[in-house]
Figure 1 (cartoon, rainbow, N blue to C red):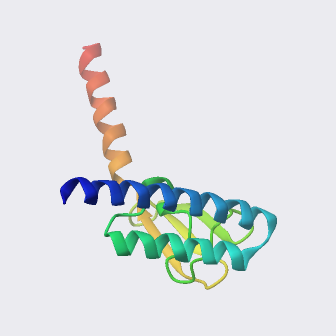
Figure 2 (figure 1 turned 120 degrees about the vertical axis):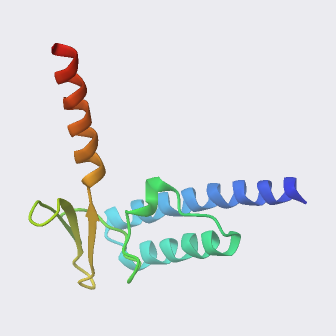
Length: 121
């Protein structure tokens, strides 16, 4: 039973990857409805098999309207540093706003600098 489950999940990941690649190609051609359909099918497979969307594709589409994003055409990406540093992604199709903090990167940079300063002394 376990081997079958692993096999199913592996096949699902491959299919998700294929569908998202097709969605990317169609979005670049301007075939938005077909790209949305591919994203919809990929998400449906991931939910059915209960696996996370691969990190490669996770932030490449809108979770609200399922539009595959192409920066500059249907998505706006900005970096903000007020209050807390974060990336703002705005879907230009439905208007949904995603805020992704990048505090972890700041902490890593700070820790790296501290280590370098301690090594100099």
